[in-house]
Length: 358
Image (cartoon, rainbow, N blue to C red):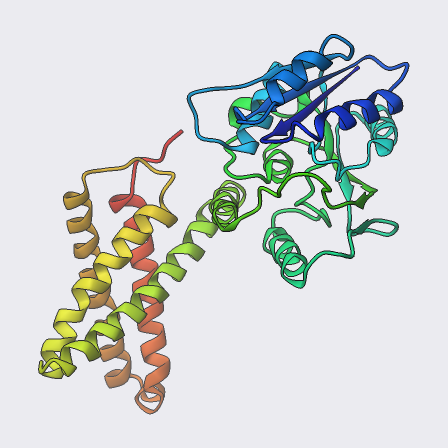
């Protein structure tokens, strides 16, 4: 018994052929097709209504939320009648003839996550892909590689047992819901089935720059989920590096406007520390409770000043008291920055951006 969840937006022309292909492949099996549509302005509702009299098809059209294919999949999973869930696209890019092979893998080992992969032996993708699309897909896969050993975590064609995931824990954004389920679920292993991925013939791809930005936000969430404080430390370091650039730019800008280098150094601290505070609030510690901005900014400034004191104090101590660092001042500078960064991260994590959400 199988529930097939198909998220859609403006796919009315593709749905009849998809349903017919599924019926041909799945004859003799008990299954249902759940079309979860983001309130398409096309004829999706009318097409599904007509098909539902002949095929085991249901249409869901959630309202009151932004259009999001990943959220559509989550709603389809919750509404499914059966525990074995297959997720696939409506654009005819995924081969229905692989479904029985995927079902066999689940029957042999119910705890596996089965995914249709383009990037293993016998798998392939449409050779008409542009260089940009090819690089985009592989870069997205590379960015997800620390999270999973799956060779094609970007695939939208996958099957799993709903007993292995609590839908309430899912927190997707964008379109890579398979990666979300794979990371947050409790699966024994991953089984990759080779597929030939075909480009759509009808309609337009939903991939655009906005979806790519959503993927980066989604990836950040998954890194924080998987690696916790280590991911926060890494993001904190990236934010600090960007703040250093802001610091240098304002330092030279102030001098260009006539300020002395000492005054410029004092002034450039403020835009840099404000930049770091805002970016850490939005990126590094965004999963934590939002506190009043002025209070939090003041706390961040105080911790940063204390960090600078540690940085300067350690540098002065090492270069005046240790002969090695007297001759190698850059090493002392690096140690000072490292010590200050550790202090700033701990202070930010425990004090400035405290109160983690459950």
